Length: 535
Image (cartoon, rainbow, N blue to C red; front, side, top):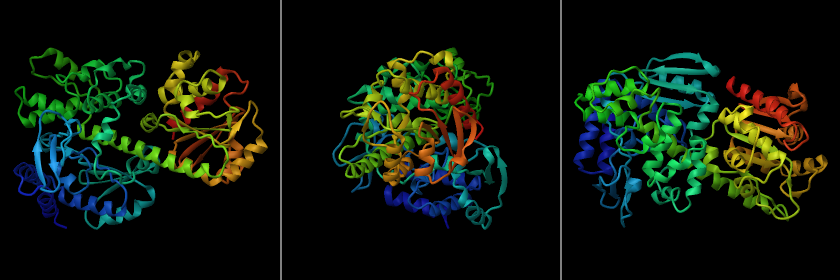
């Protein structure tokens, strides 16, 4: 397999006789040759064949050659228009991202402006990182062993890790699920992206609330897709860095490793020096910088971790497409499900974007809605779920598991808190019809058995890491999972659990029961958090 010629052929087919593309590709191929990447890339292409119909996410690159080989779905070139019939490119520096260019008839908007110069000037670099399913470990190792020597070891989380050259592959199902998604990304729908900004700013607030906590006023400064991505990058990947959020929206302040590289290069450092310093800063190394702007200098020295732009975009776009697919799959399932019942109360994803961003993903399984008339349960939850123990206690669980909040921070739960803490979860009622204040287990059991395959499909769509069964534990594992009640590990009357297909399943009281809110927090949320951290 001649990787060099594959790249050149792909470049010529998509961008014939384009000097920018040719020059960039050739500089990358030279780097590949110097760093013995060709054999590694050959292996990646062979691995990709194993996962037909799925994305094989290669982190954290952003090189045009890999995009042309379809090992990278982000086009790293500067913002541009692409005319597919004539195969011509028109670069446009009026926007950082092609997403933010004005629409032009007959052209696609593309380009995420990732400079390859940063990577190409790094002397040492873990080039590729993959997360694959455990069942493919032997197959992949046999494939690699025929081409390249590799090392194997067991790392934390009891995961197997192999390395060859500058490539690292981790075999862990719960990780792979996050990095091997259905191959959705063929042509980015720019207009669809821009809907996340307009017309409803509340949608954006719901998405970002998970990262911004209560400091959502900075969203008023976001006027483009690019700004939104960059904000999410800082908030998601630096978290507790000593950086004011508003500074990340100021183009003066670098936001990614590539930004730092370009800033240093433009301020007197050589390309090689800039790459090394940018890499050091990205990993929080104490770096003495010879730059005039003390504000920028202090800012760069404040980071404990900052990421490459390619990594940021990978995660953001991955999660966007996962969210898009989740909603489609959920709607499709409910449309079919509704035909089985005269009345049907949908449940599910409270806010799909918040759910996708959340780690871990939580599904709460309850019995039925407490309503005699038609109720839009998800809208009810999105609006803050009017009072009641059920959603207050659920909010406290989520606040601790996802946000790390101690009890003193969530003793009081009001509408504002419920809006925030319920957004990143999914809710499944075993009985999808209206009920009352008291649910009868015999009726819940009947519906669970009747709708078993639908409920299983619903769970498959959400793919949660943690399932909390509120008063439904035994019915759920017996009727839906075909397990036995003896499979529970008993901890207390409040808390039993089992690990099933890498998921933590918890049996507890219904969150609306007459138990104290303190006990619900200490005897349910805290043990779940401990289990998750020790997985």
